[in-house]
Length: 352
Image 1 (cartoon, rainbow, N blue to C red):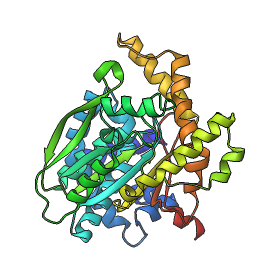
Image 2: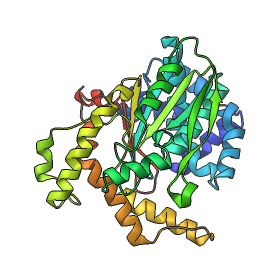
Image 3: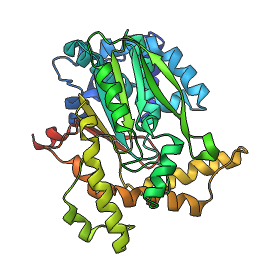
């Protein structure tokens, strides 16, 4: 099926005649995904035409993108067609309707593809005529010296990442300024993870202006506090009383981030079929780094690092409940073990 899909996508790229009604039928075959991108039997022919035109326009840049990241265009062209292109078109329409900078939140754990998604959306939206900027929650980390002081105050914060290690006021200022109709040039903060032996520090900001769309991504972007009573029966690795106290404290600190989340116009959740995949994916990434001669963490270090994040904001408690209807998530994208795309749906559509 994947080979057949790639064949007709290649025909579209080659500007060949669209193969009868197979494209339209494929786009309607998954009702939830069709609903997510507002595709109906009445408009599917028009959608195919518009998306085909955009596919041909971005394909050369898409191939360059894949080459720089040592990825295969043939393996990703289906994702480009099924997800990246329609999502970019949807963001462009939302920006046009809003008549100001549109802020799209992207929530996802390690290895879910936040960085790749953001880079592809920037590429596609540029072809649609929209200036797009990607901002990571990581870019809002407090400075190295501020985090040293923070760790002296709270020794449990051994690594950057959990709530409390970011400059929320800085992020709020950036997003509020970007959302202004006539915003002036603004410095987007950037973070160098390699500084200070991997501890990381602020680096030269990126000055931008006339931004149409902001992609604000991070491992707990949009996550809100939960009932503290849930930590009484929390899953591993929240095992000890000290673990539960740490989890409650991190939960309370999420309150500081709520003004930041209020700047979001929409929120996408990238969700693996099992949150523990992030541990496997992180190990694979570190092994790849070591194989090519770069420095990387040993498996035991990786486990300590990933479980530190799970203790602070456990995915079972904070992320899994967002899959259900009546949450503040606008789009769920399930990620398969091989990083390929799974189900794509709006949680609200599950009740229909």
